[in-house]
Image (tube, rainbow, N blue to C red; front, side):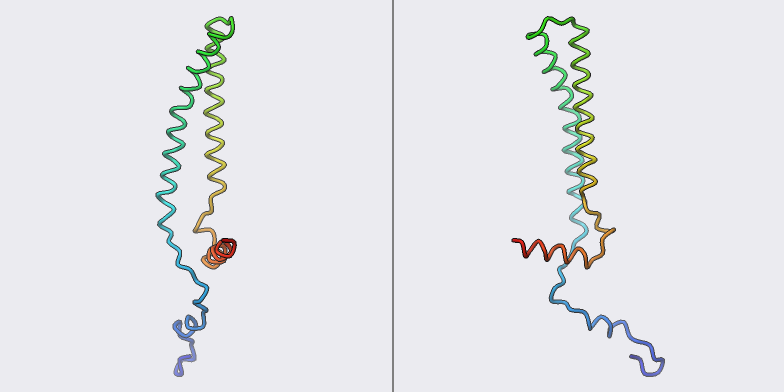
Length: 119
């Protein structure tokens, strides 16, 4: 406490904290992970619909006696469903991620300590 003004110093309040349980947290590690998952889902959105369309089209033409229009309709429908499925997975993954700015530092530290105890 400052004797002339009666105010407490910030250094004095920081000295009372227990540093034995604090774990350094680096917020910069989440960025590359987000870009990696964006790249993965982008590649999936580009390749899987093509694989689905041509794979299903080939299988339907060989296995069933359907018109070309029917084969194309089923193949396009399957491709659209695959795209929607990938988008749902992407959104599901995004909802499950923890936003580091929304949780306090003490909550992140306690979560890290819980994970260490489990190991």
